[in-house]
Structures are given as C-alpha cells and as structure tokens.
Length: 523
Image: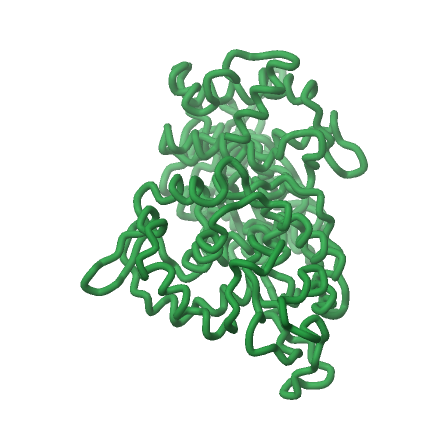
C-alpha cells in the first residue's frame, strides 16, 4: 500500500515552520530553489537551469494546491518561511512567479543579493560568493536555524512513498534533492525535533492545511477544494514514488553484492556499524563462523600446518580447511566473518590461498605431506571488517585488496535523529556532524572521524531509544570521544581546540560542561 505523510504530520511541520524566526524570507526561499537547480560557489551556472528546473523545487517548497485540485489564478503558493501572513508573499501564480519574478529578484538590482551572488555581466550566469553562507545567515536567520525535520516533511507533503520512512531518511532525501552541502546543512538547519512521522493511505487534507494559513484578502472560497477535471477519479499520484530511502549501506545491499562477488570488506572509522552489519547479514545464513585477526594470527591457524604436541610433530588443519570439509557438498551457503582483518599480516595468513579468492582458481598446498588441491566453493561467502583510522596497524597489499569488494561505512549522523531524542538534551546529530566536519577541515582525512555508535550506549537505552542526559554524556565525552580526538590530532592542543572550541577540551564537569556543550552545538 502506498504511503503519504498524514495530515496531522503536515500540520505539525507547519506549526514548527511558523515558529522559525527569519527575516528577508524571500532570499531564503529562492536560495533553496537555486541550490536545488545546482547553483554553487565553484563555477558560474546559466540562468537556464532556473528556467528549466526551478518550478519543480518551488512546487515542493511552496504549492498550496495538489494536482487533483483546480488552483486559483493567484495565491496558489506561499513561501514556507513566511506562512504567518500573506503580506510580502507573491500574489501571482507560481507558474508566473517562477522563474520570471525570481530572476528579477536576483538580477534586478536588489542589493542584498549582491552580498550572496556574483553575476557575469556578459552572460548573466551566476555563482555564489566564497563567503555566501555567512552573508546568507546574517541576512535571513542570524543565530536561528530551520527545523530540518519540519522542512523535510513540508517539502514531501505531496510525495507518495513505497513504505513508511524515518525522520533521518526523510531528511537525507531532502538534503540530497536540494544539493545541500554539509556546511550548509550544519549552519542553516537544526536536527532537534520531536515531530513524529505518521502515514496514511491517501494524500493529506490539503484544504485543511490552507485553512491554517488563512485566506488571502479578497479571496472567497480560497480554502475550498475544487477537483481538477483533468485528474482521474481515484488518482492519488501527486508525487513521485521514492524507491531508495534506505541508508547507502544496507544489509540487503550487502547480501546482493556478496551473492555476486563472494567476498566483501567493510572499512571505515571506528563506531560506524561495521560489526553490526556483519551480525545482521549473518542472520540471512543458516550457519556462520566468526573469527578475529590479530598481530599473532598465523597461516597455521587459518589454513593449517605442523605443530608440536608433546613429543610429536603433527599436522593440524586450520580454521579454513576445517570449514571447507564441513560445508563440502552442502546446498546451503556458509558465511565466514573476519573481524579486524588488517590487524594481522593478511598476505602471510592467507598464503597461496589468496589466489582462491578469485573463485575460478584453485591452488595445491601440502596437507600432512600430501599435495592437495583446494578451491573456495560457491557456498562460502566471506565478509571482513577493517578499521581504517588506526595508524598502528597495517594496510592490505594490492594482491588481497583487488580480490575483495570494498564498502566504505561512514559515520551516519542522521541515524541519531531517529534513535537519540533531543528533548532536554542537545541534538546529537548536529554535534556529530560538527565534530566530524571540524576534524576533516583540520586533518583532511575522512578516516579521522567519530562514528555514530559511540552514542548508542546500552547504559542509556530505554524503549528502543537512547535517552542521554548531560551527566551520562559527560563521562562518554571526556573519557572516550575527547581522547580519540586528541589522538587524531597527535596531542596538539591547538588542533583539538580547532575541533572542539576553547572550553570542551578542558574536560569540564557539571553545569560548566552542559553550558559548553550547548554553546558548541549552537554556534
């Protein structure tokens, strides 16, 4: 059954947006349309992009009538950041306002836009200034931020989904659709929200939402919904069916890849759900084996070799040879999980068996004095994890690397929106995004990052959510997160301060810690 965001959910998003404190709302509105159309600060882009695509983004942000309704000749849309009143909103129809009026606002001499945009005087192509974001904030939001969940809901009020989605996936979709950078997301939007997403099997009551806004002056029957005769009687196809609302790295995706290629390595900074994904993938198999590599792990342990037992030297098969005997001729596929694969010398541990990872290759090895041919069967899948930020362990050589698919698991700040309520606490998704953004800004290495699972502690888990308090978070921050950041920065205090500000590196306690943390997230 198709799913639409419910009327109550849209109403809650409307209420949250109305509370947003802004000025120069038209600039904020047009800025998001420009971002959706692909304008940036790196290169000049023709205004043709605004003509060609602007209406689609404007409709998402502003349309007050669904495609099943007969829209009036004017007042058919509204700026979502100026819904408290009609004054200052365009009176003409959306089709007329976009892009002609938007172009005039940008190029027609408004001095405020000159603080944000460069214009090529010969071609009228435009791009953003280098420091456009600071100017945009000063002009529109000041120290305030937009409720990201609310605007993501509002921008998808006509969207038909293929199933229920979470707040985090809805925000990801919004950020991706409007081409927002990490910096823009952090500076303009606040992830803290208590809006619960509820779904219905039909489009929300569009007229009820218009009634919240109120009729424009002189417009009678404006709220009333009049069916558009061109639409089918039973049609509810106002939006596109969103098919890919899941995280980039999913168990289903891994299952598909490993089925085709046999072996995968999950890499990424610590705390990015690599081991969790392996555990979830293992549930798809009737049997699995899990091992962990370490610096002393040997070929004899993994493949096999001679060992001394009392006064005799005997051959003992290692884990892999025993596993091949166990699954030989079986119909069901077995999963081998190798945790921390790069903590051992992988080339030595695998030895000549590395060639078997090509799957169409076999090799001959000595097993108890006999030359034995081995080949990895199709009913053996291998998934491994690799901590890519640890400087104390080795890297994989090319012979091993080329025989695995590599899937990068980045920190997922959006997941914290779903699992860590911000009521009475900070928005942890905003905190993590800022920390990792500052780390990358200073270190220029995506591996030096904090993972999201640092914040998913069973100590604070209640009813499937992680209910953090400042007292509980103080311990985790001072004794887990801060030491890791200090290690990333090689103990350089100035670097640590660039990431965390002046106060948090001092390992504060109590009210001092709470105030410093709130200040860090809000700045």
